Image 1 (tube, rainbow, N blue to C red):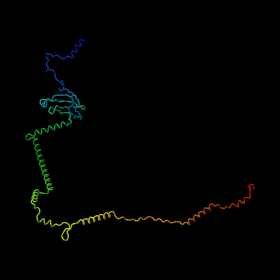
Image 2 (cartoon, helix red, strand yellow):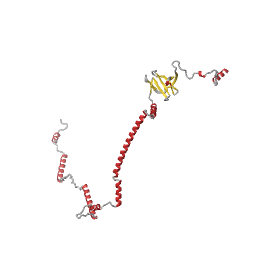
Image 3 (cartoon, rainbow, N blue to C red):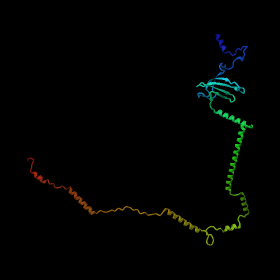
Image 4 (cartoon, rainbow, N blue to C red):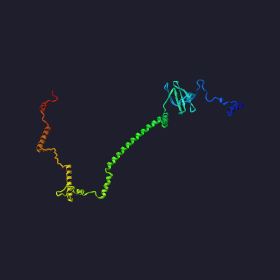
Length: 312
C-alpha cells in the first residue's frame, strides 16, 4: 500500500527536480527537422481554393493535408524582419507536388508551383482599391503617370462645363422668347401710354370725328339708324315661334291616311225550296231502300209444297 501511495504522489507532483548543470539552450524547440530535406511536417488546411495544373482536380479551401514546411531562403525570405515559409502538399488525385508561400506584405498566401489559384472577388476589389490609392499618391509629383491622368480628367471636366454653359444659354434664350410672346408689350411703351392717359391727350379731334362718322347697323335713306321698338320685337318673337312650329311639323311629318285593302267575302244564301225538295227526295230513297223487295221464290215453293217427307 505504501508503494501505491508513492506512485500516486509521483503522478500528482507539482515541483520537479532541476539539476544544477541544466542548460535550457540545449533543449530542442518545436518539431524535429526531417533528415531528408530539412522540412517540418505540419497538419494544415488549405487557406484558399486551387486547381491542379496536371489533372484539373479542384482543391477547395479548408481541406486538410499533411504538409511539409520550410523557411524561405535568400533575399525574399524575409519581409520587414518577418520570416516567410514554404508549404508542400500533394494532389489527392494525381499526387503531384504543389507548393505555396506565405505573403506577410498582403497578409495572404502566394501560389508558387503545381496549381493555379481560383478567382476570389474580395481579392479583386482590394487590388483595385490599392491601385487607385497608388495612382492618387503618384499624381502629386511632376512627370508621373498620375499627373497625366489628372490633366486629362481636368480637360474632360472643362469640356463638360463648356457644354453645360452653352446649354444653359440656349435655354435662357428660349425662356426670353417665350416671355416676349406672352407679354407683347415693351415696358417703355407701357410707360409712354401711362403718361398719355395721365395727360388726357389720348384722343385727338380727328379721332373723334372718325368715331362719329362710323354708323353701325342698317341705315335708312335719310342716313339714320333704324331702332327696334318693343312691338317690333314681339312680332319678331311670334314669327320665330311660328317658324319653329313649322319646322317641328315638317320633321314629324303630316298624318297620312292609308287605305287598307281587306279581302272581300261574298256570302250567298241558299234557296229554301230547293232544300225541301232535296230533303223529300232523300227521305223517299231511304224508305225505298228499307222496304222489303218481292221475292220470286213463291212459285217454287208452291210446286214443291205437294211433296212430303215420306215421298220418295
